[in-house]
Amino acid sequence: MSILTGFGLSIGSMKKKPVCQSPSITCPTVLELRQLLQYKPLSLEDRRVVTDVLQKYGKYVAERLKKSDSLLPHDPREESEKLSAEALNAKVHTQGHIATLNTKRSCKCLIT
Image (cartoon, rainbow, N blue to C red):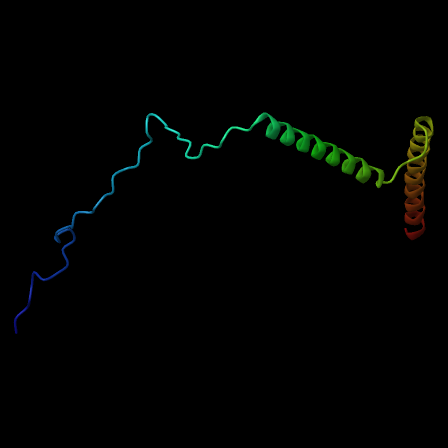
């Protein structure tokens, strides 16, 4: 019987194939822009028509905004009435909070 030796794994013994590297992308030093389409200049009449249409559209949008604002709920009270209502509301909530604390304290006394 013979013992085979020297047939083990040898890491790094295989020839490596060269890896193809693509050239790195670089930014140009100067950016050149070109306009591919050139429109005919507007005549004075066409310019007036475009300006008038844009003004009409602006007025239409403003009117539509006013109409949509008028559909929102409106509070008819005066400013002084609103302030007094806020003060009263704050007072009620403060007293309601104290009443709730007193109720909880009395419940604890009954339970213990």
